[in-house]
Length: 249
Ligand SMILES: Nc1ncnc2c1ncn2[C@@H]1O[C@H](COP(=O)(O)OP(=O)(O)OP(=O)(O)O)[C@@H](O)[C@H]1O
Ligand SMILES: [Mg+2]
Image 1 (cartoon, rainbow, N blue to C red):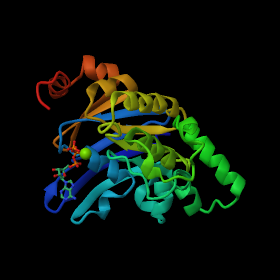
Image 2: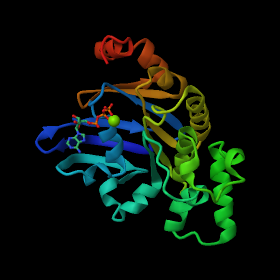
Image 3: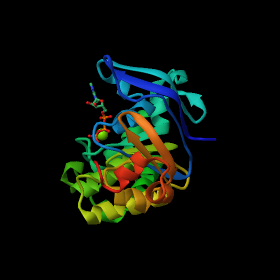
């Protein structure tokens, strides 16, 4: 089963059409990169999946998106949908809480109470993002004291703590240095087993390094999605060829 499936999906902000007739599937156990020029609709596509786009004034959609085989409209409880679909943003967001409380924000919200369970989740998730050794002696200190790269790994740990099946990342490395970027790329590659990862990136090298498939969006339309090597080396569309070879950006 595909983890995420767009079916004849369109979005609008007021009268302006943004995404147009999107039909695309995203597999589990796989990393898909979304590339395309600024303003083409990449963030809108991600935020449509977890229904945060509809919080924007004037947003409308037509068509459907299925998450784990179920229409996002059928998730009567949107928090259940967002539990399955985690999201990490461009600017690392640390909640104004301790490191530990950042990781446990979701699990506590969803009702995990036992101290031993909470401790286990904290350690497991911080290890998954290769942050445990750096922070295990200061779990009760404010997360605000972490560096940008550490905060971004913490944000990924926070997303993972509720055991999502889909992880959306919107340019997660754009404010990070090469070392932090490398760490995050490595951990995403490890996490892909068991997860559907969809990552928006402006860094075409990053897309090539970490993704199994790449989707190219232009002016709200999905031009093509293909195995990453194919999309970069022998794309079907001349528009894709122009974009990946740097003719326009
Ligand atoms: N809240 C909003 N209200 C009105 N228009 C919006 C809103 N958010 C985005 N848009 C418009 O929707 C279009 C797609 O925006 P989106 O943020 O999805 O692009 P993007 O591909 O993520 O761009 P970038 O690479 O710059 O992040 C743009 O024309 C943008 O101006
Ligand atoms: Mg964006």
